[in-house]
Length: 247
Ligand code: NAP
Image 1 (tube, helix red, strand yellow):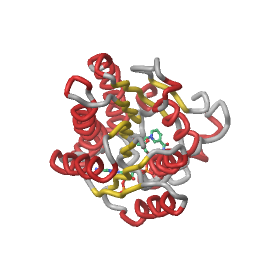
Image 2 (cartoon, protein in one colour):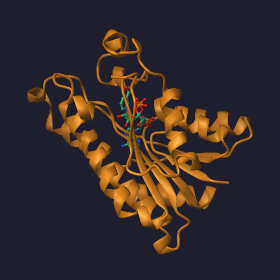
Image 3 (tube, helix red, strand yellow):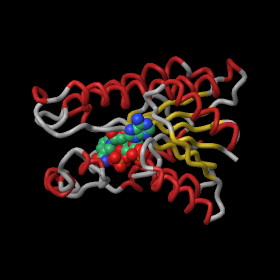
Image 4 (cartoon, protein in one colour):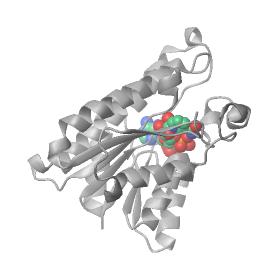
């Protein structure tokens, strides 16, 4: 059985990815940081349907926690074949001049440093150079990286641009070690991330500006993630796949 570790797998896009991955036969490690109830619910649903899953608490911006997360996932579920760097936060919506330093720091620590710490750990396990079996990493960027998100969260957009550049560089660095690295760049997707940013109605408000005239659903992003993880995407490396209704 192949094992997928999803950071922030208890809610939103991460939860949809965990459920779809389990249906496709992956053993799934569902990472969470605060919300154990939702992560355990995802795990219970997978197990009820005959799949294998495990919830593991870890703050991905903390090096020791990341180490423990990977050690636990591999010990309990077997060698890691797919990492989905999904966990992310936006901070509150507003003008950049009003952003508090602590919010700025957390957005960069979770979205950028967290993605890097988890990727480094995954490569150490997956690389054929160090005796690994190879694997694939899918990073979650955002269309914000391209539009810059003025008046909303420029620092979040910049953190996702860093994720895209990181994807491009790392995919080239380890391409010959059995590892493919790609990125999914969602547009506006209906999850609680907008309420956490202070605007639960944001997906509806933006619908008319999206060529397809609607926000996306978490399972529509999950499908792209699972495709990039699969052998069907065997020649995709360093790709940034927009899942944004054309926005
Ligand atoms: P969400 O519903 O708010 O879920 C975020 C997840 O990240 C939660 O499960 C949360 O864990 C986890 N998380 C946050 N900080 C963490 C940390 N320090 N360590 C480990 N896990 C942490 O968000 P979403 O909308 O599904 O977004 C998923 C990804 O897609 C993010 O990277 C986001 O930037 C990106 N994205 C989303 C949209 C959108 O419109 N929804 C658009 C573009 C890109 P807990 O469950 O424990 O709180």
